[in-house]
Length: 439
Image (tube, rainbow, N blue to C red; front, side, top):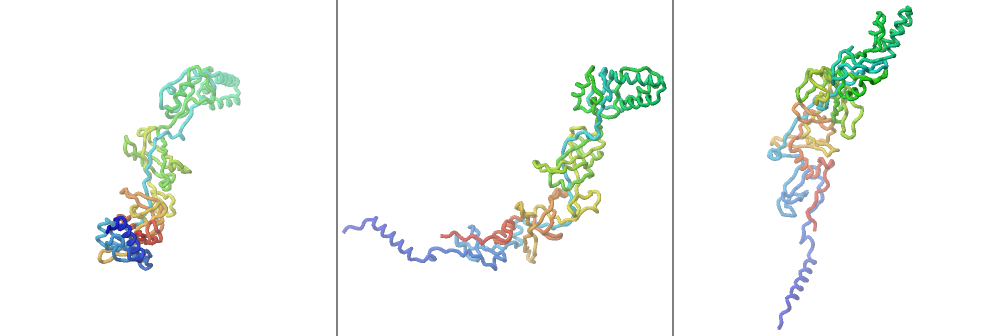
């Protein structure tokens, strides 16, 4: 008798197996964990986690995925050994002034509030130039000669004054003398009154002292060529005070709130180092924020710079700023105007960019266990203390004397997320933990 073919035997076996599987209840084949959250344990922040798989449950026992014994996870509660392994460090919340040192850099320039322009006030043709018009950055004393002009207008006025003197015409003499004073040529009028004959060449002097501005010299050399005719309002030279400079810097938006006009500025340069001998103050604050670089322009006036700084020198500025209790700039020299604020280390703050929290010590046990609780924060400006450590002003959420975690904060928050309680990302607690793989 022939044996049945192997193919028929295999097909019969598969059919029998499928029939047996279809008749068995599903619980005999798969164990589906209960993903429902126990409200009591959820409120306590207790979960059971598999040390091997990514399963988190609400009941103790073995992991339904791999069979390993699950361990309890309690939000915010750490034993002494856990604290050591996680590297947890604490700091005490303090109270003090909100002070910063604003640092900014810029290039010095002339203080153009003290710029003076020398003009002839009488028309004429240039017949001679003095040293003031040739050397760059020449320092001039008041009364220094600038150019000689051939001036028919001045020559005619001298003749009229000489004639009035001969006739004894006092009103005309007085009027002509005042005209020469307006031209800054009083010396010529005095010479005519003294009996000297009129001259067709007059010397234009600078009525101001100062340094000839270097950047104008190309224009000066062109406009003061010999033989060139100048009008009464033609600028001849531009003089600046080399002892007074201006420093324009841009302060980041967050630091600009600490500044106010009149604050003292400490300066430093690469070649001279600290410059305590210079007097520098915040003169003007920009009235708007530059939207491209998010900064505010600050203009600083510097006195006594002649022998130390030159226009174009790179200068570092340090400005101490303090806030009053209303978060407006206070007087850094008057502690009575300073406000007192709750201060917290920056390392204690977890932030999403919108929400800020810290983990505060809620309870200490005799066995060394520490229980933390989440403290949502309303933050003020960021500060930097004398040691270079960043601090935050806390508007609400903590009080002086509270202890907060400054190291291991992310691990504490992650533990809270695993346990399904309030954390940085989940203000009201996480959703029900994910069940094991479903089949």
